Image (cartoon, rainbow over all chains, first blue to last red; front, side, top):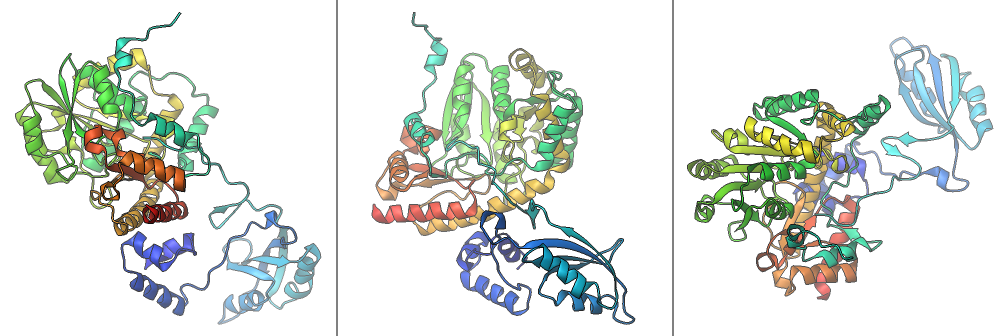
Length: 160
Length: 386
């Protein structure tokens, strides 16, 4: 099961047939395992990794936002986190250790939308003590994938 | 004036597939399953160690034998991994790739007309390097014995001129390797006949189904063996050119005496990068191995479905498949596959005699999965159109 997940995490386009052959299993058992993982919510979805810089008008503005929040009695940070991550503008939300509690990645059509979201939605929330916004300037690497021009393969076509 | 080259250099048999090679090298947009080196680039921590060495001004010679601290690292590594004990100051020599280690070992050991037994099919260099050194290479055909050297075949091939047995396992081009028991049986013959074994174990870390056993670790064999290894395959470091040889003190000393006049030393920055590979490269090596293993299963399964037969490749990244039932020779198959489908494989004759290897091809799976799949689809199509 873990091996199947490992393969799909690297390449979600792999078919059950490919996976079965690579792991020396039969196709129906691989299909069964994947179906189970989807049903149990281990696999939540599949999506493409897109280098947005390479297409026009497909480049939303993103910012990392550090949010200082106060925990709630009996609920800890989960309550305030949920209030925040439910906004569709929030693409990512982590509880982290250190000088602030929640780290978000917020997305908007342009810089004003993001600023607006912070000023009007995020900062006024009860329990939010402060925010620091860092706009993304350039994406070099995300989730193990390097963006930009791929290094060329310098091997010769054939060697013994 | 036309310069006459030496008879010796002229005597080296040119590869029968040179034309095919030139053809492949000149082509664009092909998918090559003919590349005998990893498709991964060197893991970054290793590259970084090389860069650091340059930044720090390590651009000089090292001692002929190689950096002592590197040799110590190798000694520790072999001790820990295989319980093989080699003295870093006397029994280890750093070479420019495993190829140089083989050349030095042969030159240090061979007297004119001494025989070297070389399993066939095998990597191309062993035969020619032996010839260059004035030795007599003698092929042991393994085609009828599952591509493995057997004690019987060995016993039959040994003459009073036989001095060396070359072993290369896991093997290029077949991917076969030996179990401990098989090695023990070979060791008996080696011992009884006082043979020296040059054991090229460059693919040792790429053994997929069981733990690799160095020949030198078989009881009584360390004093019979020159163990050669390198960093090119397991750590994806082909271009760095670092290998090493371990063996009895007098042999390593003799090899070093040749090495000091011909190569001087391996590049210092490469030695430093390779040391990093041994110290912190395990993870990257395991990740690559995992990927090769999956590809291996995939290729075995696909080629099997297409009706190819081949020895089970327990290691390295090669499959040596027979194309006999297509009615084509390996060379014809490779040329047509290249022209009609733009997929490159290597004709089997590159790895030994025309007679024995005529109907084989070598397929490497050092290509990323999606391309590998595409290439195999094309081979499948090619077979249908035959």
